[in-house]
Image (cartoon, rainbow, N blue to C red; front, side):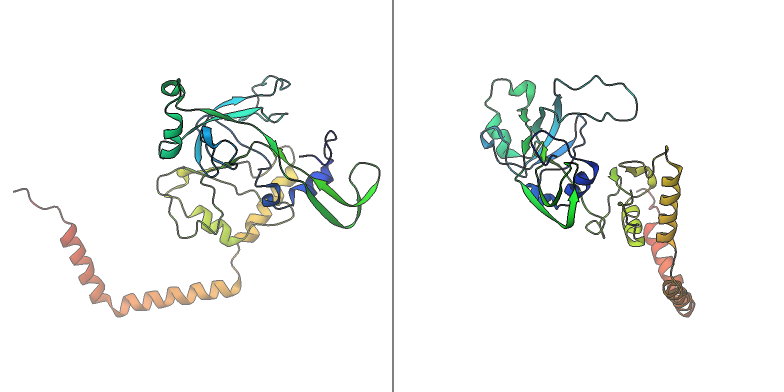
Length: 276
């Protein structure tokens, strides 16, 4: 992102720009994670002849780097690029019948499966007004600044919020969760519970990023404190859980005969049947 054509944003300006709703940037994402086979959603409708239609689901199959990009040093679990790629090659999913029909007639369809490239673009400008004049690194105090975002118009497919996935079950599917506490905010207990109880086991959930920076011990302490604070039960909830547990125990005792009969019926219905 940048507030002028050439000058990079200062850390303060970057934070201010990141706080602006992504929808005001025409849904252009702030960053993009890529690996071969990643599922993405097309955010533009600039190339319908090639299948580049808004909200179509595509699969990442190639990355065209900027020629200024330095070689990968091989350190770390992922590579952080210094420049926005010149494009990401994608191909439509098989269930996008309209897109497949458009691309099936091209000469190399059998080899490329209709792969085409999505290139970066600028978003519309967004003007942000500040409560008080700020110096964004230009040496001048300003009351407002105009920001634009530059990135590839591809969004993450199948991304849901913590409250959106409430009541859902991911079963044996492997999902990636982001549990990093937002800057200046803690994590709500309901958020932790909802996210981590959607999976059959902890083997089916991966974290998007580390919860703390190993270079800074204070960040580890801050994360632990926030999780302990979120996991602590308040006195009202503790009392309510005790009340419900007592009611459950008395109900089971009151209807002990009915519970025993139900267990016997279940055992009878699920018992292996002798072969004919």
